Length: 303
Image: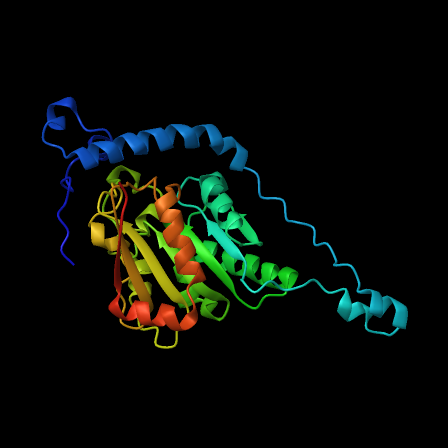
């Protein structure tokens, strides 16, 4: 896959996010628009961030009304009749990225709910989390609780950045493919990223490096993994180095990589066009999904 880089990998992160005036003349209009959008999203997210610090309140299940014919018969079927109905679509779990929280998914959550997803849960993991493996184990316990509470055997996951890597580790290394039907990742460093060298002091940042043991584990064979992967990656992602690291490249995984043009890293879980692509990925029928993943590529251009 050939990608023309909009910015050089050796430029410091601050310059990649906020280009200097002397360089503006040489930048494309698309990159300028994407940078302006990233700044606006960052400002808005900083305002919403406090609202997502606390964990999400779990919905209280409401038992459906028992049909009249059951009430009249007085049979012993009442316990079964009072069980919660199981919607056709599995629950969707939203998992945020590094030093973030569930507030990043406010717009995506609304979009999913408006298009038929009745059970959506945003999970927080601590910003003090220092190990992807530990976070993946905790994710597994959350998923088991959600499946027990909702009556579903499977869930779908949408993970942004580090959240996608945590979910992939759970699926690929901890047997989570039994529970996860589809994993959608947004700007996730599947092969490791080399940006933010100043943050190497944080253990979980070191685990996102290309030479980390976690990345090495994810490169190991996974011949029986049943989860379908859909990876959205942007050609203007400031935090992916190289850009293609946000693609799932593994011979044993059923994966589709969707290239997004015109948005940066922060915009991936926010932009309405990306939300449409996510909904389509989650709603794809099994036969159509497998046919699409045989090609392994896709495209989404954001104006």
